[in-house]
Image 1 (tube, rainbow, N blue to C red):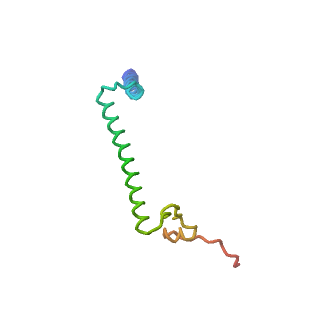
Image 2 (image 1 turned 135 degrees about the horizontal axis):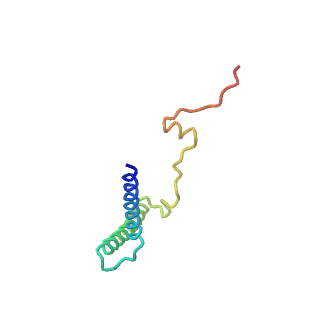
Image 3 (image 1 turned 45 degrees about the horizontal axis):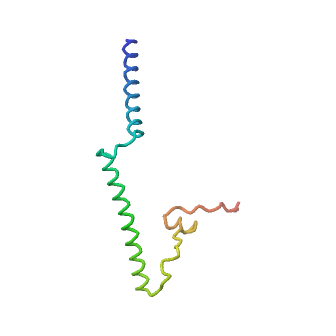
Length: 105
């Protein structure tokens, strides 16, 4: 029975080591530019870059249009602080307000 456990442990260790080695080699191996995986990854990078550029262009267009509508060239230039101070934040989140104990003895 002890031999079976030893064989199982060795087999499990070999399988785990092989899996780890496969993952590491797949992540660190140089990519072939003609491989499908490389082409898909490059396509996704290009799509992401195009999406970011489209987002920036649309945002600039909307800001420009808003500035024309409100007739203020500096509109949307300053950041607005939406954080609430301690007591207001607790009330906004419906948290119980903890106060210091009073000295009424």
